[in-house]
Length: 455
Image (cartoon, rainbow, N blue to C red):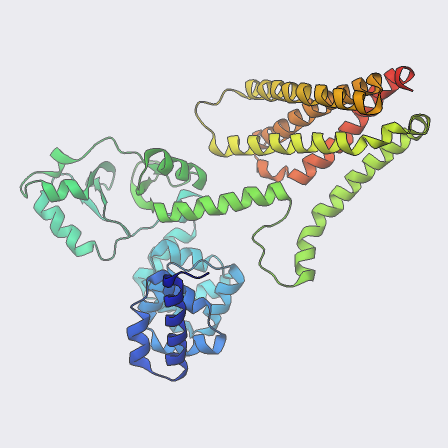
């Protein structure tokens, strides 16, 4: 059931669409700008191409830029939207957007389109955007904005407030004001609150905090996100390696980073792009098939291994009943260990121990969970089949398989991280299939040692 607020918004969208189609310009603009900027963006995304074409004549590039600053869309969609607009309109819109958002938008286009729009912009906006375009993806430089306010230490609160009032409109945030020296080296930070409550003639140098937490322009965006999370910042300054202030990263950009990193990690764990939006089954299948084919061949090795023990299974057919039980439980344990390891590597908590301590911890965890699970299945199988030697074999296989799966689930992503690869690539399906292989090997080897006792 829809809330009153949702119903009202839907009614407003319907009225807006009616005004748009009826060419009621004034009525449309009045109702449109009564909406929150996010709701404006959602209305835009709901329109057909023809309706969007009419909307472009209703809104100025600046008004469109405000909306595009909050729109989160896939690469294909952004390119489609920009292609619908006149090139000069796009250039003006990008110039009015926050620089970091304009850079994100341009990075979704090919080089020819980038060059075209940059050539149509005013030189100042084009220069600012080009400065950010050359930074590597997923670094502090690629997500920072250059729209911030900085002041110098040897000025008064009065002059700082005058500067702040003049530049606040173009700045992405003014809650923190960063202090630089004559060489633009970051030397301090002062809050808007401190500027407001202190006398006009007080010097900034006497108020500012010299203990500034900053990030380097080449730092990974995950590290930047961790800094903002740990210190509860709304923004963090970005400097070069000589501490010159280059820009700031704001918390709204970090929320996007966290969302992207979470989606990337989950895609790795699932072995598929969880954000794929294509409705074309062939395109979706082409993205999923490489992993599935790889896992198919790995799974065939498991089937081949089982085939090697065909004679043993024919002698004790009861063994076949528990194959899926052991492999499934070990696979689940391995996936749990993988998820914990990937999360630990993503967080990189300072309290974490060294590599070997973490591996030892996972081995002990595997032994404990394996022991409890093994003893449980030993009792269940012993009573169910009235064959405690068989229960002992299943229990021992379960203990060993879970321990090995736990070790693999933690060791593989950690080794990948040490080698410089994304640990999330060690996906859940891969670990599960690998666990199947090792579990079968462990199961039948233990069974072969104790066959004479349970047949």
